Image (cartoon, rainbow over all chains, first blue to last red; front, side, top):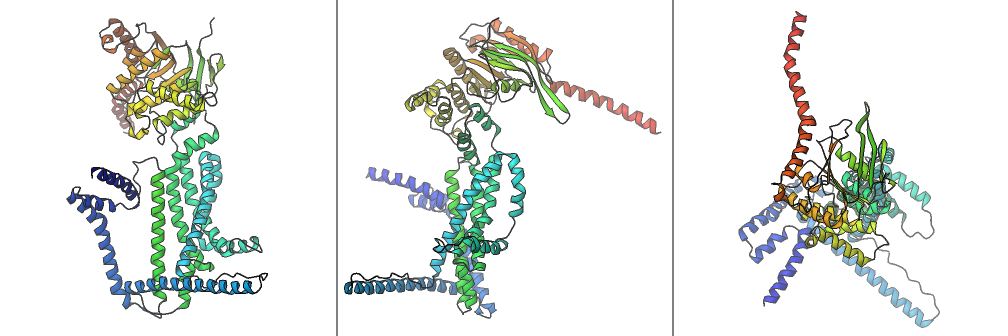
Length: 349
Length: 289
């Protein structure tokens, strides 16, 4: 009995650590269940969970109250109830589409088997299903695009940031360009990127679709800057003492970079990466909308053009999903940052 | 003439300023024998750290130079290990890893992995830090950090150990502990040590010679005091020793009679000016009338 209890506390220790990173409010709840100073835990839960829930409830009430009074050409503005209905619809549509696709492949398989039975040498064609992408498909496309653009941008921005952080001359040369391009809206880049991609990316059997490359590059161009600037500032701000340590040890260039420069720049670098990812997600939606690239942005635009009585509700679902994914992405970066940061005393939020 | 272990010959250094070069050190000459413990003492801003940085190779002398075992010092290197005032440990590495970084750099290819491990642990034991090897700097006290800093420097097997006010940021009790540790280590290993300090007791207790520096600008060596106290030295009995107090008195006399603190001198000048102030104003008024 005692052993199993010990085992339980050990597991609790591990989960606690994980929870602290992912969801802070669960911790006092677990402590409450275990019976650790219940009064205090209740207060923490009250502040951490009940207050935010109250805020959301008030928002929903105001939304439900005012929405029916806003009458558009597509009917009244959707309230939370209609939005919920539409989100259920979207998931149902997705499942139906999946069933259709499976049925299609099943038919194809049976047909091909028959053909082969008749004539073993027959050439069978395997076609992929060409139904329209569902809302969930669009989410996946958007996520893949944003992560590709963001990772490529980071792969460029971090080394460049380190280099310009190390050399004031290089910084002087590149800083004006950064300052010039940083405030440019993705909408301004988009036509240029589209034209360049269609001119340069010519292949009879493309690995990626052009629209994917276009939106990915637009994302990349817009989310380079925060990472680059923050990395440079982090690298330039390394304490003089640590640089002296490196000199006295006569560290080689690479050891100096990997043992001294990179670790001390990591907190600033992650601040930049978080900003970049936020920008990437915002830019992506705009780019998809305007360039008709597949993804959530296109979903919104298609619904807007569609103009059915359900459209506004479906767009509202997309808005909430976009917001939620943005939030989750930021939280993921935050936990990464907390994991990678050596300065455990720093308050990250 | 015998060639000494470490030679500073006619070292001068100028720092560029908007108003032309500023001479911080002027004609510093010093010969240090192997195994000697030297303290540099002087008021703040007198260029003690500059001397140390030149020996370390972090600064280059404008004129003159430093020769260590017949080789001119022109860049930093692990044979002249530095213990910095604020420990300068890498905060993202544990105590062990901090020492390891130095050992890996210095004994690349000369020691096997297990030999390195032994050597790192041995050096951490020397400073009594073997119990906290896996702790990171933010998890240990200031005194412990400085111990690890000393272990890191010792692990490089330096020809000269340079210490820049190593115990300046510590409380008196911790400082005493570390001084005792340092004396033990010096007795065991016989390192050549140059230490900067502003603590008279520390200088007398630890040193073979105390180098007293004049105030800047153009600071130089004012006087050198040989401390001929028997080793091992024990701090409590020393405080009653007449000899010890004589040396202490000598250093104090140099610092406070021959070389007054520049901050105090400035304060007096300001006072004089404020006395002169109203008079000037009166004259001005008369002129106007």
